[in-house]
Amino acid sequence: MTQVRCLVLSGYGLNCDHETAHACRLAGADAERVHINALINGSRRLDDYQMVIFGGGFSWGDDHGAGVIQALRMKTHLGEGLQRFIAAGNLVFGICNGFQTLVNLGLLPGFDGDYSQRLVALTYNDSGNFRDQWVHLRINEASPCVFTRGMGSIELPVRHGEGKFYAQPSVIEHLQAAGQVVVQYADGQGRPASGCFPANPNGSVADIAGICDPTGRVFGLMPHPEAFNHPTNYPDWTRRAHDVEAAIGAFPREPVGGIGFFENAVSYLTHG
Image (cartoon, rainbow, N blue to C red; front, side, top):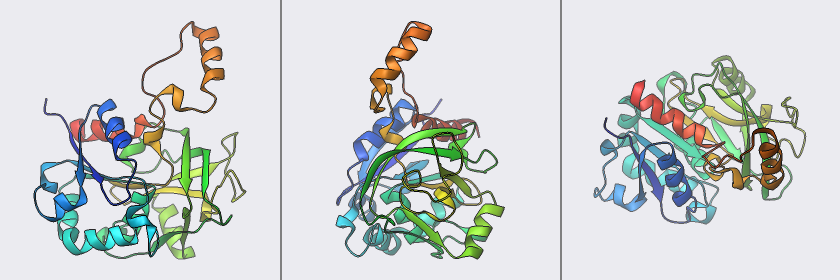
């Protein structure tokens, strides 16, 4: 069976490419870190991959706004190629700064197959501060998103200063009605955060942490699933290790948590 090929963007302030590629490999993909200039100059081709990941970091130092310059460069040089890549049935995943880039490109929300309009924004946190914390998340099991199949809830870290999801009420209503609101911030019992800080770390409208396009193949998420790839990534892992060992006699060493997003992507590209 041919291994799924995944392109993980790197360069110019992006700083999560190594761990994102690692997460892809744990999920069974053949992941390659590719500098954005390699796509622009043609030495790497989008058509050679089945999934592209816009990873986290601070592309171009977030000058002019998070993800703005990266989106401009990608749209100017690769806009039509990205449109063809999506039309061909491939996957696009934007994480944190990558999510910011996708909304600036207009690849999300992609209403009615239009991947050119910017209808939503990810802007400054209501707290006015950079947030580095773990959050509880609710996953919409009715969403068409292929990355979240079979997932109900999860804890992941966030680390951003511009993570507040905002859009006009009509756009929010459209997203909700179409099932495109995939992930929302929650409290410790899994209930909606209802905008309350710090369960909702940035003030996102409707507690939105991630959305997809109507096909479910383009997905943007503010929290970092690649950063929860092993039990020891979790802040209370030593306590959990004690509890798990007491219950089953051994602490699991296999990939956990966020790897499920990548496993779902690989499964979709392999089996549909």
